[in-house]
Image 1 (tube, rainbow, N blue to C red):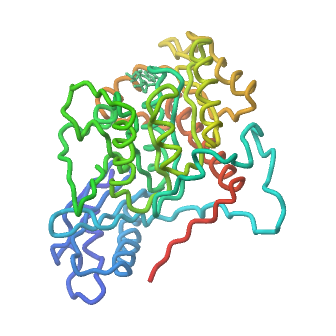
Image 2: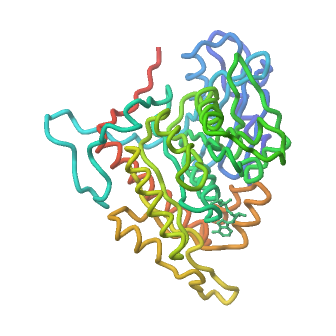
Length: 398
Ligand code: ADP
């Protein structure tokens, strides 16, 4: 029998807040519970709780709910009187993040898989950039050309990582043509500002923010260079992202102002390039790749979208010339991150704002290709972090 909200609420009824007699349910602390397969979101109102208490309560919730759901991906949010999120926890058992190499005085590890990415950052745009507090990896998704599925890949990457229990943010940096409001069905949600910070929307387990939610819908977004710069910076720096394992940034297509602003503003672990197999898309992807390298951003690899089509007869058709983007990646010495088929299901789920459905059932060509891409992506991120000498993230509990 599938787990229901009632089961989750019953589990929360066994969780006691230190210092209080009542459990979470009897104490009226549970604002809401949402459940989708093995993904559970819980919102709690514990206005008096300090940081340590929230972490303890989060762990207790994970323990109690874990007995009800297999392979749990749990989000516990704590809200204040105004309903604004003050802390987000993902207290499921997570694999330890990769250890950074000990400082032995040796040169950074070179030539690890792919080998094309640089190991030393030239003095460029990235040198003036800083990270976002509490965010471990900032990763951009770019493409040389519009319409190759860049936003689609960014959304599915973020949702797939969140489904693994990671804490993920997704920023719609495509400020000229934001797609996330549609792809994540944000239209009905109200934008919320708390203490001067934009509160991201929590959808499909991902914290997300889009310029599309801050401007009038359907109005053309014509930004001059400095305005584009300001809009991107505001979105990045004035959104209350909180602690994240990954912030995925969906960039506009091409090599314009926004990637430069991003490179100057945010220190990135790297960028993913989305490309279809055709020659015209490849040429633009090569330009995008060179742009990232010039900006001092490591290219994590290339993903081939709309790689092939699986017909009703079960046969695979190479409509656009499958393998073109992979060959391009090889030519440039970049890691190849995977091939995503063109499917009606993916298109429909994008249009209806339901990316979670792309991963279910898990044995479809689409779900398998997305999961394989995400696994390769994670390995490349680990390697990039090691090459860059990024220290292991630490969680301080006082
Ligand atoms: P971009 O961000 O590169 O402009 P989008 O991600 O907005 O491109 O995708 C353009 C359109 O193509 C969207 O309607 C999307 O649903 C569709 N699309 C993208 N990738 C696929 C795919 N692999 N299969 C089916 N439709 C896709």
